[in-house]
Length: 150
Image (tube, rainbow, N blue to C red; front, side):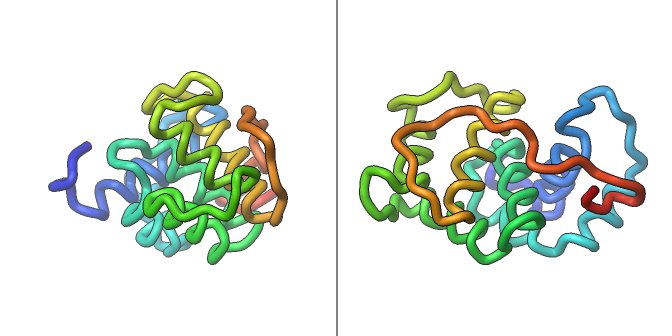
């Protein structure tokens, strides 16, 4: 993925990651992904701020936006991009350092571990919790029928 890729393509990859994160082999019809994108308009905002080529991070922030608070989840991503954090216990601080390769679990662009670390940081930010370091987080919810939250 590069900066010249249209936003709707980025949204497609983020949506697919969100839908299939726990089932990588799952086959999805394009129209199913397109409907998911329309149902979750926040994806258009998320792709503006997520690190280039890291749809797994966009997927983690997207799930936090659905489960917790859209504004807080998007603020988390904006703050990480702008290096705007509130002290050394701010989840954004630890996530920013991790993105820059300065600590935390090993990072891989489109790996489940990247999703889990981003999910941990964003979840804690949305819940207003302070952290001392990053960990991996299990998924915060599973999808039900028609891509609704179980």
